[in-house]
View 1 (cartoon, rainbow, N blue to C red):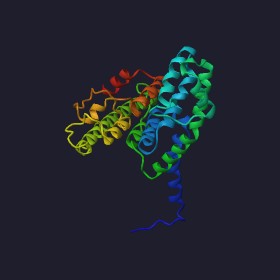
View 2 (view 1 turned 90 degrees about the vertical axis):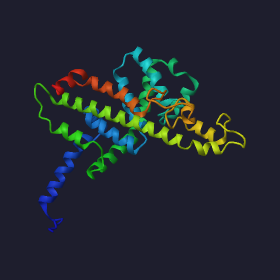
View 3 (view 1 turned 90 degrees about the horizontal axis):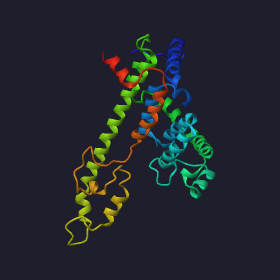
View 4 (view 1 turned 120 degrees about the vertical axis):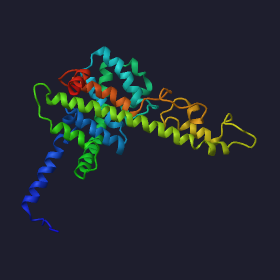
Length: 284
C-alpha cells in the first residue's frame, strides 16, 4: 500500500482543483438562482438538514421584484399566510417593526409600496441563515454527503448544442428532480399517518374506564389534535382512524408544494421552451 505524503505537490494541486470545481456554483445564493438544478440540490439538502423556511422565504421574496402593483397585492397575502402570520406553517423571524405593524394592520390593507418594503426587510433578515446553510452544504459536498450528485453530473457533462442548449438540459433535469422531491414528500406523509395510526391502541387505553371509543377526548387525544399540523393533516379523523387515508384525503401544503410554486416561476424566467416541449425533445 502506497502512502501519499503531504508534500506531494501533484496531490495538493489535484485536491485544490476538485475543491474549486465542486464549489463554483455554490459560492452564494445569487449564483444559485440562475442554476435551476444546483438550486434544487441545495434545497433538497436544506429540507433534509435544516428548517427550510428561511430559504423558501428568501426565494419567494425575490419574486416580488418583478411583480406589478396588482400582483404584489395578491402575492403579499399568500406570502403573509405562508411565512409571516403567527400560525403560518413556515413562519420565519420578522424584523420588530414589521411584526408590530402586521399586528395592527391587515396584510391586504397595506399599500403595495409598504408591502414591497416589508418583503425586502424580511428577506434581508433571512440572508444570514441562508448563507449559513449554503456554507454547510459546501462543506458536506466536499465530504460526499449531499444528495443528487448524479443529477448535477448529468448537467455538467452535457455538451450544449443548438437543438439542446445547456439551459434546456438543466431545466429538464431540474423539473424531474422537483417531481422526485414531491414524490418523496408524499411518501413521508403516508408514513407519518401510518405511524400515528399504529399508536391509536395506546391512545384508547388512556380513556376513562367504560369508554369503548375515542368519541370522548382524552389528554392523549388532545395532544394528538395539537400535533395534527405537524403531520400536515387537516382532518383529525384521519389520525383517529375513523377514515381510511388515501392520496385524495385533505392535506396541507407541504414544504415541497410551496417550494414548487415559487420555484416554477424561476423556471419560467429561464430561456428555452416550455416544460412539455423540453420533455418531448428528450423523449424523442
